[in-house]
Length: 421
Image 1 (cartoon, one colour):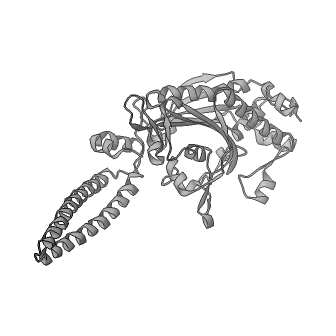
Image 2 (spheres, rainbow, N blue to C red; image 1 turned 180 degrees about the vertical axis):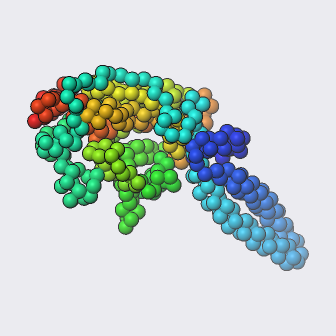
Image 3 (cartoon, rainbow, N blue to C red; image 1 turned 90 degrees about the vertical axis):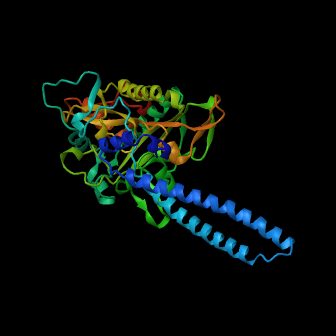
């Protein structure tokens, strides 16, 4: 959520940000409600002061033996108007908060302007794409021949997008999770095991609602949401808390299964492991000082890239354009791994800075040593990493002509085997 004062003082900047993110512009309605709110507050405060004066006058008149009926009637009239104002103010503030939640974060000046993925900027590429004398196979052909991922039985049990990982594929998944968590721990992230369902306040705090309701599974009877990412519970871990400035930055790593309805996702780009309704992911979350948040974003990106380099998987980094960035971010990088059997790039991590947008919704602050005042922290997160497309990339990158898959060396101490066959 943006600061209302910031909106009042930067109307054109905010409106431009809304246009760049192709969101609904409710700024004029917000400003009108804000003016109405301030008018009501002013009138209410004036009447409350008058009520206090009249109440004191009544006491003096009664003490002097004077008839105070007219003054009491006036006081009752003032009291009724104060009650009306309080009711009107409550309604106005509810409408104002509802509209404030529809305002997206303002893109950072370094973000390229654009409307489609074609407008994203490729800023870095690492690794050699494998070359083969024979066409490399996509992972679904390899996993089917090896019998290590069962999409059909997953569909029978739960529906499309809920595969079974079998035998060595299941072990590979577990190895990747432990490897990612160990790497995060080595670089200063504290591990959290988080709930996989959250309440509405938590979903609102990180910006999933009112923006991505259609993407989430809902346990309607208990009014709980299945998490789309560990970002939601882990960032809410410190909701309504205040840090000491000396404790920043605070860094967490959390593994969870993730659940996404992925409404409207169909076609060849969602085949196999490319897009699932349930998948595993390790998420990296930071709470940082506002003055360092963009340096922390670069550090976060480095932490995610390191994993791909250790796995030996070619990848590229995209700086996302304004129209492809999302509602809550000010700046976002996507890391895309090369899927050799499909001859395409697959996103495996998004590293984002939200500045104070989420912290303001969740009321997460720090006490400034310089001013002694409480200020909002900046929050960041990034996938470190999402597993399905990593598994797909490993299978396609390390496939052999005999139909086997070589396990990356850094994972072999975790899997305790070197070949999937």
